[in-house]
Length: 71
Image: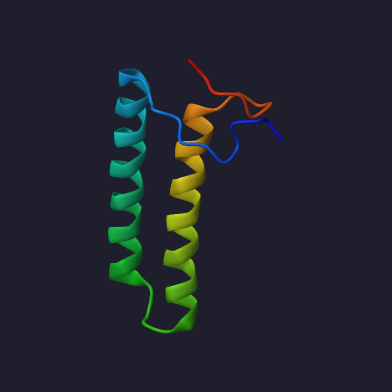
């Protein structure tokens, strides 16, 4: 693990724009899922995993493959 693994990385302006684009796409997908997937534990799990994937996308935007901060 990189030394900064558990530290906050301040995203650059470009990274912030990329994160916003990902958030919009995830929100649009979540809206579709909300409309077509029946209520129940599977839907809950699905939406929680989508939220997790969205968070990992932010990490991938701000870090290099070795875990070091991307500048």
